[in-house]
Image (cartoon, rainbow, N blue to C red; front, side, top):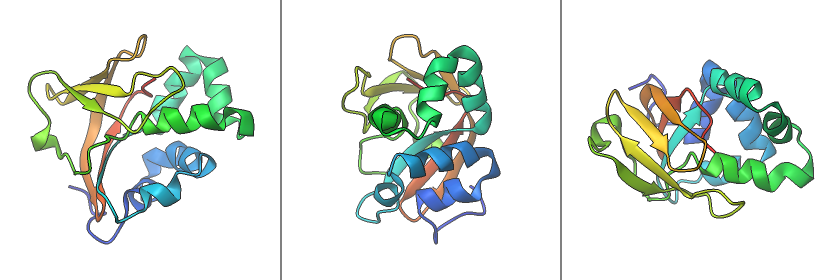
Length: 159
C-alpha cells in the first residue's frame, strides 16, 4: 500500500500521484471529482497513468483529442470513459482480492455504446476489458488506499 492512506479520498490519491496528473485533469473536467470524493460508498478505481493517455493519443489521436478537449459536447464521452475504470460494486477490491480466473465486474459506465463490464483476472495482476478493441491493461501499482476505496494504476485507457 501507498503512503496515501486513510485520510484521503480516491480523488485525493489521484491528485497526490504524479503519474496520474492527466487523470486528475480529466476527472475534474468530467465533473466526477465530487462523486468520487464521497464517503457514502467505497470505490475501486483502475486509474490510467499519464503514459496510458499518451499511448491512447498515439493509438487514436481523434478520441484522445475529444477526451482532452474540455468541450461540453464531448463531456458525456469523457464521463463514461472514466466511469469504465470504476467498479460499480460498493466495496474496495484490493489486489489480493482480484480473482485468479476471469471474472466480470460491472462498472459505473452506463451508456455511450460502451460495454459496462470489465473482465478482471489476477495473473500478474492484469485485467482486461470486454469492450471491443480495448485489449489488456496491466496493473502497474496496486492498493493505493483511501478512506473511500482504492486506486490501482493501469497502463492503458480502457474503452
